[in-house]
Image 1: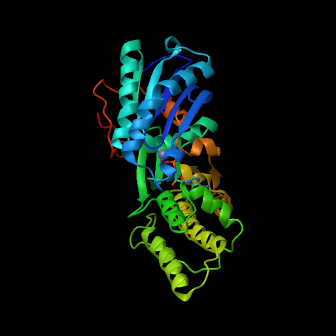
Image 2: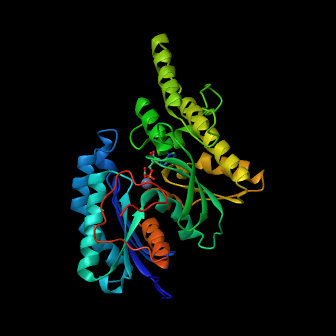
Image 3: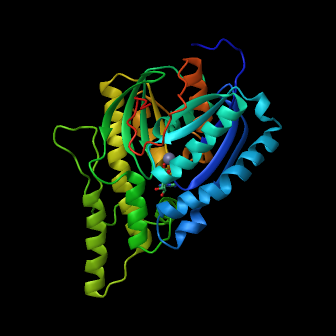
Length: 345
Ligand code: KG4
Ligand code: ZN
């Protein structure tokens, strides 16, 4: 069934990792509220997200965050046309909180339910800000859990053309930051420190994968950083943190930019999108623009608050899915390993 309406008001719910977020978005582009309760302070002391702690915190936060979103948007449940929720991929216990809440509310209030893929929602953060975007597109999705190059032929029509063999880009930032005692999450800390360092100071590897021109591997780079730190310690030398941060960041960015621009060229695509938490990185944004522009390719990325986990991107994707009549059944369940472009319900 396709809906024929001119205006859709959608609530997005996001609990796949360590942010409890609820948004109210009109027509997939007008953000009336985007409330994000971050659990960073809770997980900081452990140096990463503790799944059980994350689920408990979501349970505590979800109702007040929903209430705050409705109040700040100035709407009630009766005004909503749909509730969109991330049902995967992510931490299963964390996802369950959002999924169960969305299902209960939608059932009780008689509202349409839409199941959303979290990685796909990251890509759709771009449609929030650039609703005029035209296909085909190439999107680099780089977050704490994913590093993927996706070819988008149309809404819901994707081809995953590159992915990581081991760590995600954000995971590499977080792990290297932990080795350097920069705290959690590592991306923002390394981004900041790298601005004072020389990206050519320390030679680090860039993985090029045989027969996989768009694929990534960051574990060798992470080990090289660890070895460098250990060698310095053995020699009694002090590690120059800004230089190491800049050299590491440059190694990650070189591969991300190279593979993404190559994909856009080979697939004859004129616009590259960036998405996910690592897309906040200032150097990645500027280098991607520079290298793509040299090939006549444009680059777009969402504002930082829409790159990291948020529910506005979930509501945005739910809007496009609703327009295609893609509703979820009441059996919708949290799916930790949900693949891209395929709903599992
Ligand atoms: O998209 P996101 O909020 O959550 C996931 O779905 O994983 O991404 C979080 C990741 C973390 O690994 C964090 O270190 C990274 O994004 N990140 C950054 C920056 N800001 C956040 N990485 C590099 N540079 C940044 N400025
Ligand atoms: Zn995410």
